[in-house]
Length: 144
Image (tube, rainbow, N blue to C red; front, side):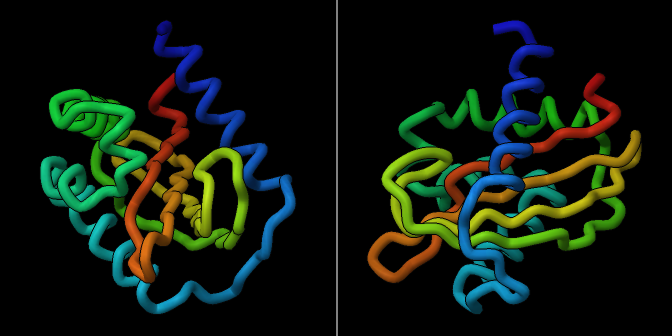
């Protein structure tokens, strides 16, 4: 798949997620916030194997450890490290469709990376009372 098409697809998912229905929140459930904070820290420190091991089944069923690691490293190589993140919105949903079926929380950050500004989206899903990272998207000026 062409890399520009992949980035366009991610941008469309982000845009659709911003405009579609869902419960907008000003706060994030504490258990979900803890998972989100850990995921952000692991991304920032390059702990890509740990992210994969702790991710949802949905994440691990879509890519292998090696593919996940390579994609995360490619994002880091393209954007550089994140300097600042500003929470934009969080949306909690109960759906049977994309981006993730079930009880999910999508959190958007405006992020300043070493090589430009962008948007990060973290999709968490709840299974059995526990939250897991299910998807991670980045759109950034450095990707163009």
